[in-house]
Length: 301
Image 1 (cartoon, rainbow, N blue to C red):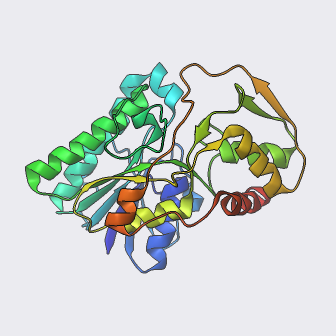
Image 2: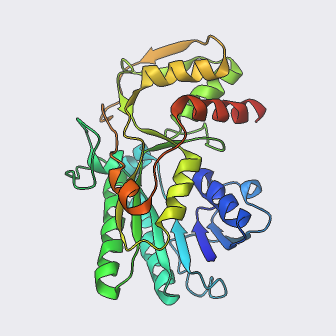
Image 3: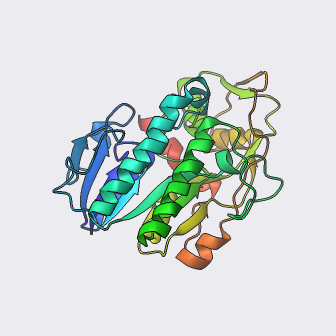
């Protein structure tokens, strides 16, 4: 298979590239290296240092992709609030550039969307039919990108897929930023620095291991379009996550508490039933096992 992976130098993207290269696919990575790391890209993949907001068709004419895995994005919720125009430029305009690249080559797009930021508060694991209530420009821009995929499917008869991801964690996750709480907690434990829990720690999220997420991207290839949740259906509180991290590290560690963050979701989890039925996918790595594997990587960094 000939594949393009946007954001392929990042945490999830580079793990996906490893899987594709490992099975013998021809892989082209598109990344502007603003957040991704060149050294994470498999040697057999070809890197194109490009900004997805710019035209891609001519720059990638020789790639001739059959599938475009679109993971490049602006993912910082707080940044989306402070600069919604930049957020939309990357997440909406960038997705349109990817769709036009795919249309040039009759390629399928498999898009990394978000669950929690689109569904909002969840009293139970959200299905794909749940009301969509984004409360940030980030969630709104991801939902807009999904709608463009759906419109292209109707307009051009394509079969693009959007995967609404839970809170992805695992090796290569950046501990510097708001999107990687597992990496933040484990790096603080490694460095002997107290971690911070905002509020009382009862907030819940659906944590899904990066290798399970990569399998979901692979399973979506050839699917007949649509939207699929990629999560475990299990809620884990921040307090429980912190305990899991200290258990994985095998050490006692200090944690500080700070005021709740304005607008933070209290409950979020995803019902993965549709992905299991239609794609044959479900999460296989439980949280203790995933945290242990992430700790082993963090410890060596």
